[in-house]
Image (cartoon, rainbow over the protein chains, first blue to last red):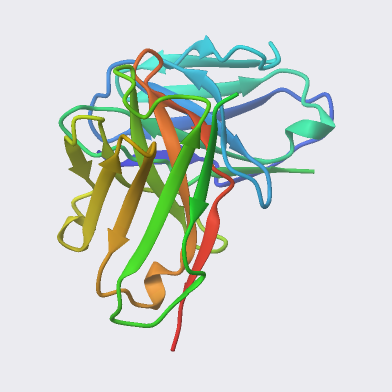
Length: 106
Length: 120
C-alpha cells in the first residue's frame, strides 16, 4: 500500500486551522495513525485508529476518515505545533507504510 | 515508564553488516499486547518501517529490505536486535526502535534513535 500525503509543505500562522490529507492506494479500513516529529526527535503518536486521540494530546488535534482517505486537522495552530506530520497505515497483509510527511512551517 | 534505547556502531563500512540492539525497560518484551519494530529515517527524509517481531519470534519484514534484514528477540535480557547486511551509502539513516501496541495499532513508544553512517 502506498500512502500519499498532501501537501508536502504547509505554511501557516498561529491560530490557523490546518488540514493534512493522507490517501492510501488500497483500502486500509480505519487502521491509520498520525505522528508528529520535531527536528532531532523521535516521532510521537497523536491519533490512532484514524480518529482516536492519544491520551495527553491536546484536543485541537483531530483525525477522520476511513478506507482510502484520511485527514488530520489542527484547529487554532499553536507555536509548539510547527513540526512534520506523518501518517502510517497498518494492514496485516502488507508492510506498514508511512506517508512521505507534511512539514508545517511558519 | 517505558523506555527503549538503541545501541550499536555509528559507522559501518560499505558491504559490511549493520548490527543494532534495542534494550527495553519498563515493560516486558514478552508482552502479548505489543510488537517490537525497527524504523529508519535517512537524513532529511521520511520514515521507513524495516521490520517487526513478536515475543514468539514471529517476524515480518519490509519487502524492499527483506533479503538483507534479520530481526531477532532475546526475552531473558529484554532486548531485540537488527542486522542489515551488504550495506551501502543509501542505508545511512537514523535507526529507531519502537514498541507497537496491538490495541491502538500504533507505535506508542520510541527510542531516541541512533545515526548510522555507511562510509569507508
